[in-house]
Image 1 (tube, rainbow, N blue to C red):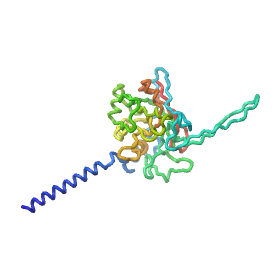
Image 2 (spheres, one colour):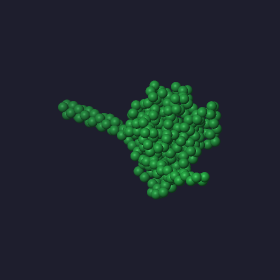
Image 3 (cartoon, rainbow, N blue to C red):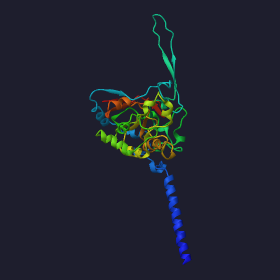
Image 4 (cartoon, helix red, strand yellow):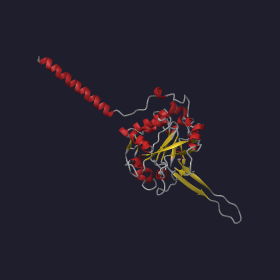
Length: 324
């Protein structure tokens, strides 16, 4: 009898230990992981594709966007490029330096002036990320390999020149307004419910090929409190990123760096960048200027952006435009 009871107790303790280990493993497991190459490649756009969601740029997307222009009001969504921290933000220790090359004035003679720009122009200011910007191990979007595409003078594949001009319906998701604040908290995690409620508030739904722009209010800090802006930021969660990818967007951007919440969930390394740029091939816009757009309650508009055609670059500074 005693042996039987001892066996039951031992079994209970064993099951309890297994259950505790399972709970601990569940708590420690990341909420999302980049799938292995053989699970994510080729992309839905086909083996060898370099454009990803840019493939949604079709004539019907342009025509759909053009129909949204009613007043001709234009909003420039790009921040100033300057090396003066009192008026601009250059992220991640990168640099932007503009040096004038003036000519000496000569009476009754035409002269000209130029400049030399020394800059990490692919990744400063308001910027669009090309797929060459992110890799996991040695693997990029569509499983291009580092050893095959790296070049000292630019990447041989997945460079920003492959994006091209994008024009589509733009939708502003104003999460700050939904929460009744000018600016979300420094590490506020934007959930799928936040995105859906903000859309419902304006009686909008997302459509395939949309450009989705998320207002956190955090962009107000650029050029005013750059240290705070760069240290942390409110942004979308992993779950929100998965929901957005499911809407089949052409592009997703925000007025923060770097679209996603920072610090990242579960101490991961920029999981949204991995998800969007490596797994699904969705381009990201960062450091957008959205205060005027949000103040005007411009929630639906024609969106236009054209990256610089820098062959092999990992991204480009851009000035996106919204027209309604």
